[in-house]
Image 1 (cartoon, one colour):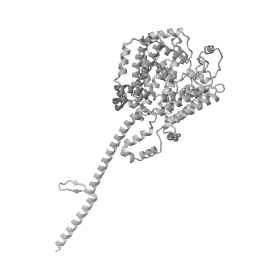
Image 2 (cartoon, one colour):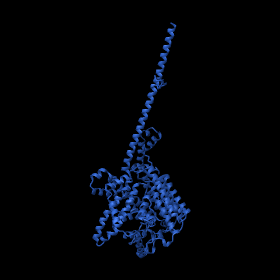
Image 3 (tube, one colour):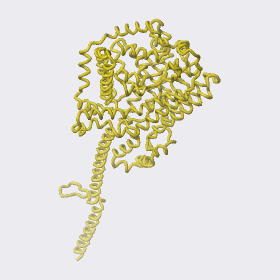
Image 4 (cartoon, helix red, strand yellow):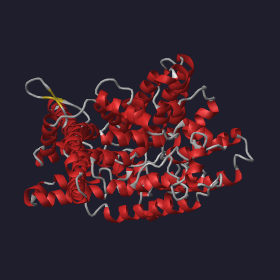
Length: 620
């Protein structure tokens, strides 16, 4: 009995232990050994591990799908919002949050960023003071800051002319005020990115001081263009590819022009003999090294720091010192009309006209730009179902609607300089004052241009003068190609810019050949001349639109797709014309220009000299 009782107790104890083991296995608290001698996890632990694995798989799948969807939406956004006013930096933040997928809902920092995004914040690096205005107008904050700063600069220009007149204020005070106002506007628009303006200017000024006048122009050109290109590449390929908005590299482009122009003008005035200079170079040559204050005032003054335009250093210093016409032939101007003119004509009428023109162009752009999107030129359905003549008409209309935004910015910038008293360029034949010394465009001449050369001479005029003075007049080999390549490097890092300017080289050579060989046959009568003008106007507008499409599309793929839809017809035709039609070599054209300059009186201001040289290039 005792043995049976002990055996029963043992069996009960083993059963109780087995029940405990089973309960622990269910809870996952222990492992057991199977019949093969291998350890096997408990059921509870195994189930939890499987659930964790399945959750990880779902998270990875969700992230992958989110990234795919974000990349797809980003590609669509690049095609539809590229270089338009509506492209907002807040959209990029939404795309980045979508690309993060499920992770954006689990990470606290991302949740805070999306909460800030929902509250209407943007990625603008400048001041957020005008955020309510941005929300009301539905425009990006950086563009609102730009327009408001330009309007403030316009009011400041009137105050600068009336209360800091050179007759009552020293040049030192005018330099200091112009520089401080310019830096304040730059900080308001671009935040700490405005420090690049000071860094680029200070770096190149050090090069001017240390390297000497013999080679300073080469080093300054190399450093300034390299610094600008580095900033553009960083902005394009690191931060916001394809988003056209008010960014800090725009003012840097103007400052780069001023730095390089100043370096070449100092080299001409202090390192070259006067007999080796052209008439325009003699007028612009600088005979002494500018002080640091004068240098920063020239580069960063409030009248031109945001949108330019570029001006010569001599003209700017003459304006600051109160002698704006010392580079002009005063006696010739006065004798031409037979009466003495007032020394300071009022710019108010011209300023009102230019401000009204600029805001009319802005209104036209806002109303029409989305009616004819440029991206439709590469739409597959549009290319397949639209006749070719309709494609040509639509190309012209779509490119026509992209120009008013440039008209607005440049005309308003010209008005700001005129309001400060800068830009007076003598008198017309009827005695009315001209305020076009630093004007950047002539709208009617652009829209009615009858040749590629006339269009370029009236579009972004100050940049064309800069390219001519820095590159075209000084490059010994292939100056046209070198000028277009420098222009592409200066504009930015988008591949579309290079496609545009490489196409421009071919079209310029073909247009020059046609003008030299065909135009003389149509000058026999006014009727023939009118027919020639109508035909060349249509051909010029189509050629300009064809050339500029990559400049708007920015990328290589869409640009090649557009050119392929046209079968590269203008490329092929222009190459054949340039090869088939003879053109007088450049050294012979330069000799003809020198003969003409000796026969005609020289205009004693730089812009007139550039206009004369351009006219002689057209005639040859």
